[in-house]
Image 1 (cartoon, helix red, strand yellow):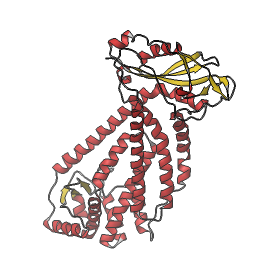
Image 2: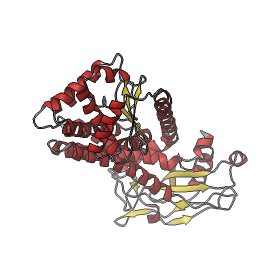
Image 3: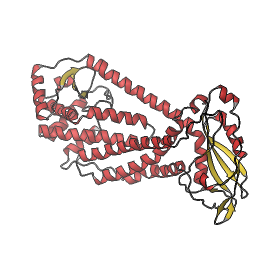
Image 4: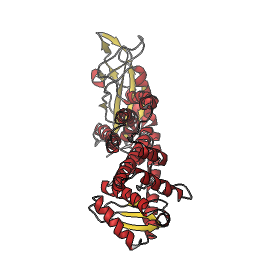
Length: 438
């Protein structure tokens, strides 16, 4: 953990990950309510809700990361320890602060787990791309001239303005779209032989709807968001809903093109019957087989297509409760002192509310850490008694090799007593200690 602890983005990413738990749960709860209210609206509208929510979740993560990063201490040019106050924001009681203290030391491990999971997801995406653009496109065969003419007519009717290539492939078991600027629609060879021309045209209309909407690019962006926030149940749920509503949008376009929902539903069933093994198409590429087939067929055959998930609020109550606990824990303590539940329980205060009686000279840089060029900021939690003397000091984050030096130095400080309504009280606050080498 020595090298990892000195990574400058470790703390910002770690706390951004923790904040994303409550942010994602809150946004997902809001999205669930909105999707339920929009259950009788168009699939396009529900798709916009789910996609916007996922985008807001990613922006919240990035914004928190930038916010935490901007709160760092300036670099020092001296071979010594500098002391600067660490703001504590707003808090909700001593137990919250103690939970914050408990979570702090786990940030490096949380960061390591996230890096491993994120890297694994990127590897999986790379493998999927290699398969799609390798064996799939490499084995592409031209379709009969008759189908090229039919496909061109469908493209014009679907108002797709860019050229789209059509090809046959034995590597896929469903129609699939590859590419954005130069899209290709892959058709299983078996589908050309087994399906009626009308059924195949309906399926091709579905794929052209994906092309017109730019779903391949949208899927790439969504896949990256899934990789960044792979650990979050809200992201799993939102991604499923986005893909589900995306297929519904293209189903509606296909029905509009062929004019017969029963014909299109039969085409989906016929395509499914051609399969001899589970779906081979990665989620990276929009395919006619995407989404839950039975749900899609039931929706097509209903007079008024709807999708009303049962009790969305109840589904997210456990996640919301967990998010509240972890979200509160990652917030900082209040600017104003709060009395503890008992006389002996320290109040949480902002450092700038504490008057310093004596600040000792900075100690020498720890020799072993200096030899290994270990730098970083150590955050120390201090507790002072009613006389202003330090009674507790604990390092909660930063390079472990610097903890002992930081704690020892913090214990040598002397403060004026903290006061509430004019009376001296025990208090708890934080100091950040940047260790910097020339």
